[in-house]
Amino acid sequence: MNEAAPIRRRSTVRMNTSDKRLNDSASQSQYQPYKDAAWGFVNHWYPALFSEELPEDKVEGIQICGIPIVLRRVDGKIYALKDQCLHRGVRLSAKPTCFNKSSITCWYHGFTFDLADGLLSTIVANPDDPLVGTTGITSYPVEEAGGMIFVFVREDDYPLDDVPPLSQDLPIRFPENNARFPHPLWPDAPSLLDEGAVALGLHRTGQSNWRIACENGFDNAHILIHKDNTIVHALNWVLPLGILPNHEEPITLTEDEDGPKGLMQWLFTDRWKPVMENPALGLKIDALNGRFYRTSVVLPGCLMVENWPEEHIVQYEWYVPITDDLYEYWEVMVRVCKTDQEKAAFKHRFDHVFMPLCLRGFNDCDLYAREAMEEFYADGTGWDNEQLAATDVSAITWRKVASRWNRGIAKPGKGVPGATKTSSIRLRRLAEGKAPGYFVEKIEDVNTY
Ligand code: FES
Ligand SMILES: [Fe+2]
Image (cartoon, rainbow, N blue to C red):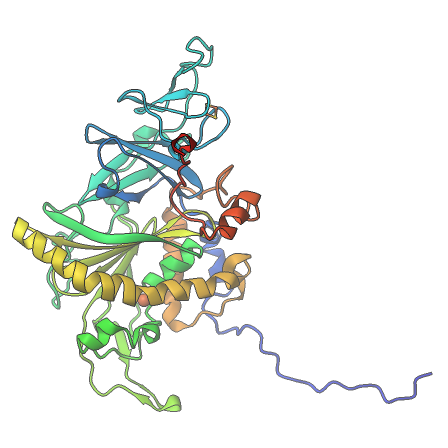
């Protein structure tokens, strides 16, 4: 018999998730579709490539929402098909093979698909096969605007007649929305769809879920990570410690029937107040040196930062889902240039100031922060275990509006890179120092050795 006194545990305060948090289970239930959208929202327009990345007759392969897509430009027009051969599933873009201007042929056994509609039009070694003309691969509508190529990433059975215009998946425009969203502090933000719009930027693969990336884009509580960015010091900006909602409607939804669906934040109005001091930490901002901007976001995850990083320029970002743990981060600045001289001046300033200091320096901090969050969310439990606070009203509002208006939740990718996280191919590529990404790896032609 053990005569030792029983061990008594002292009572202790358990640090559980607080009841005061914004995202309790009732709130979470309003954005369940968003929680289910690990692979993104389908039946939306997404940026695929910059126009200059797809010159005449070039073939390129990418992946969006777990769907492999091959693009080819012929006589200036761009076609997009599912990049997964009907026969045995290899990617057409891995070794582009085209015998004429109207088709693309699978390099393996020669299944040949019509570029316009994806129909199996012949098979190189068996033109009389009964399959010919009876089946095919999905085609995707394409639009080009301001130097960017957009693809409507649809489910196989989404009717082509129901494809909305690109403008429904781009931010709201000005000046037509000036009365609704007045902005006395800056000139009208340009749109990619404006005449003379020039888009300059980059895209790169980020190692996190697309939702984490997207929420970071318009997160008002993360000024901290940018406080020492070179652009901030170089231009003598003095940023507040944060900004807090200060009104019953700090955010307005945009839910017009034929327009983009998302939200607009009333930043730099009395609906948000800057935080200038934190006495507990002895932090105090004496005087702001304003960089006035405004952020909005629309489905399927397109951020607009007006008046950033300077007047007459708008920054757009997209967080294009590749898999459930990779996204293509698009960082684009748009300016309307009326003359070649204006265009050259914009490009010069972009190359030497904005690219290094904004899209790289400033935004690199965001990229790292998203990757730092990924493991908490990767197994799906982070959405339940996070404890959001007052400033996170933006993320919660976005989750709800995205849940209401998305045109479909992407199913996990099938037979594509990233569908199986531990495939031997993925591990071999990692061992070779190749990170998983957006583009298809081309097959080298061994005959040249
Ligand atoms: S895998 Fe494409 S033709 Fe066989
Ligand atoms: Fe940021």
